Amino acid sequence: MTRVAAVDCGTNSIRLLVADADPVTGELVERDRRMTIVRLGQGVDRTGRLAPEALERTFAACREYAAVIKEHGAEKVRFVATSASRDAENRDEFVQGVLDILGVEPEVISGDQEAEFSFTGATKELTGDDLYLVVDIGGGSTEFVVGDTHVRAARSVDIGCVRLTERHVRQDPPAREELAAVRADVRAALDLAEETVPLREARTLVGLAGSVTTVAAIALGLQEYDSRAIHRSRISYEQVAAITGRLAAATHDERAAIPVMHPGRVDVIVSGALVLQEIMERAGAREVVVSEHDILDGIAWSIA
Image 1 (tube, one colour):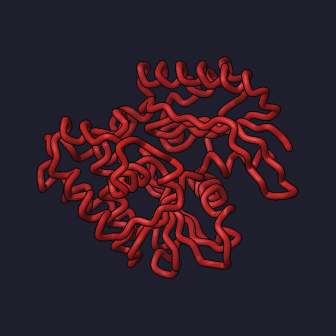
Image 2: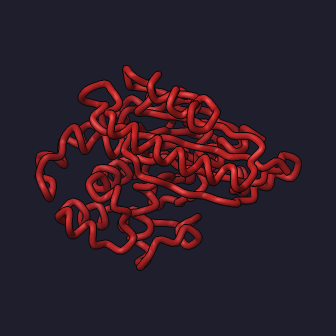
Image 3: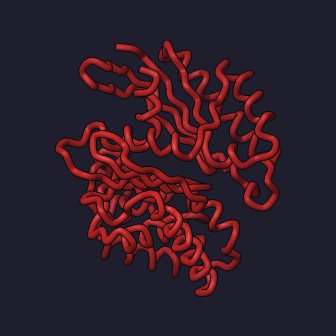
């Protein structure tokens, strides 16, 4: 086995997976998995630049992760950066900071590459010859991938919980017209995605990332976040719609009081839940299979 470290830096969070990978048996044994909300994409949709305070939050997390990687003795490290750093004018500053701290240069990957990693991570352990639609709802973008054992079609579109919240939401709780504006953006983006990806053909919808896992944790009635309970759970459309409505009607403080709500998701979870609900409606999905294995696992496999 090879001990690898995968880092995924998105618009809202930065995450680390240290694992032992055996490409012969297809086994990936997790040694450490952690997530930090850094909101790297703060203001990028408006300014086109990474904010100094967002960079410092991200670099602080990188310093913590560097210590974890050293402690576990990972032989290979791969750092992948996604939506926010793709969009930013000053991404060179971000790249140099990560290189100084971790000793590896972050790869600012395309949306299509992001989609492939997400699909591999989410479906490698699933059995059967099903046709999957994998959706990865991030902070700045959402990736759509359809495939079985291999990717057949993929598309990344610029709808994410941070981007949509910053673009449209000003009131607490969000006003009806603000929610309508979020939904309109999502539907327009789904039209774009559907030009490339057959959203209605897959038999199984697999949902990834924090917006999906948070909705799942609420649906399961968890009193604390439990990735083992959430992973591979099945959440119905009716549950998603009810939770989305509940979150949209709640104030910031009421959402913050939900036991499984991460503090860094309180202000963006409404937009994230709306994205999930709209995807399920477009795809005609009666349920979503929730996966805790995602782009991080796909990055780890790419190293191995």
